[in-house]
Image (tube, rainbow, N blue to C red):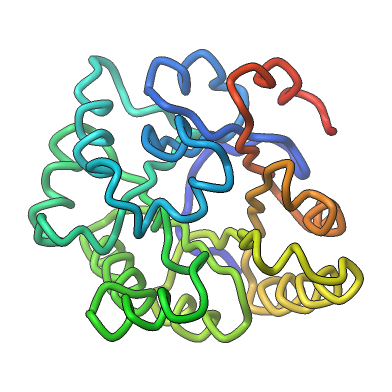
Length: 238
């Protein structure tokens, strides 16, 4: 099964990058990249929470990054805060389209949030269901989409949005439990994604790689969040 996602991809199990600018994406056009200025400049632990932190305008930074001249790189997906309280979905999608962007992900994502914070955002209409509604709308308007998912309970909503790709991300809180149990949970989720006919992308940083490493052989692309100082190590498996 294919899902209308003509992106030119590197070979399976290739390490990709979380990038801050189109210039950076173009420098590394041999691998897939996730463009997210706000999360790429944050430590990985804070980037996981960026969908709820009042520390900047995630989509404002993204739109500014997209003002760069030149075509949108063929292996790049733009990370969009899909629950932007200050921009209507149609307006935001039109602004992205005008800047040449035609591939989006729900990133940073409330999928990474659990407990009372996640519940409060969902009750406020700023949760995962709204992110999937945004991706569904993007698909209807001709965008290619990458849906971020952290747990099997989110899979029904994600599949209903008919994304082009699915990306598993692991919340730091989940990775702090027994690694064997978390690895088994992720394997089950990856198998369900494969059974649904989707290639798998994976997001990883140092704090969760003890459990995400078990999914490397499943992944078509692995997007690494790394400190700028560690950037040089990202072209080879860790």
